[in-house]
Image (tube, rainbow, N blue to C red; front, side, top):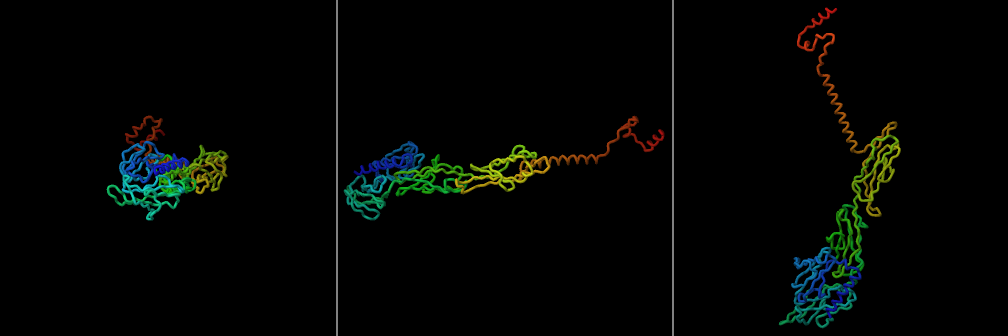
Length: 453
């Protein structure tokens, strides 16, 4: 009859799981056959690893060490110890101890619900005879044992939750007095259900580098609950408490988050919560349109505002001499005149959350536009050193070097001795070679002149 009760409990557990739609949401668990806990070695216990992870890829552990039973979802226990199983996608199961003690108190391996009936049984090693059995809740002796080795509790109430044990005289060839280990029994009002997530900041939107806190809440279920956190696309276990806190979030923290809640037998899962990591706008710049650096009065000028980083949507506001004049990434100035002179800036903005409880702004450097009355040209210059300023400086250096080089050459020519005069065509006898190699006196020129006169 005890076995029938356990099987009924197992069936009830599966029905609850189907009712809640949890078949695909289970974390890794170990199922027992026969369905009593703690399991005992002499029952030839079969452990089955169950969960939504990859079937046929189970890894078993005994006392923390791999068993070498790779890929098998079920194993038959031959030694006492603590067993665990691991399935890719849902992780490692809670530990399950297999006992080989002289006296063991067992309870059904099922969810114990308020109003149900449960039978506790006190068993001796290798099914030896046990007499004079007493049951205890903590240190309080309980009455109402049935057939000497079993205790029925009906109807179950939340107050029945607690630690139980039994004691009795075990007989084989000789007899001895023995006491079982404590077994914890938890009575639930309902299996866990109605799991929901909330986030701070609200809506799961968080700025890059800030902190994010996710909270997991259960609408029903009074059992001792365990929590696990998961992100879609990642097999890693993110946390094991009712709260998950992410410090200094980065781009890779964006995604769909879920919380799973288990009472040890059944599992409930929340709907996904989308977490969005917002990158604040930064490094706004203004770029003049084509041919905008040198235009004539009456022409059109187009200015474009952009940001280096920033999550969409990004809005742009244009300022002329500190006053808002337009919105959007482009500013088109029609028919340029003196009234367009002044400084221009753009303000890039994005916000966190639909309610805009945090707004980020980036202000561009100033761009100056100077319109001189009567001048055929309009000058557009950035307020900070940029490519135009560098180009102008480079041209100035080249012109200055060229001017200095010409001035230096002219001075050099002025310091050089005069070149010899060319010989006169009227006196072909006087040649350059004669003037250079034949010595002469000034009176020779005078005598020559006197003779002609």
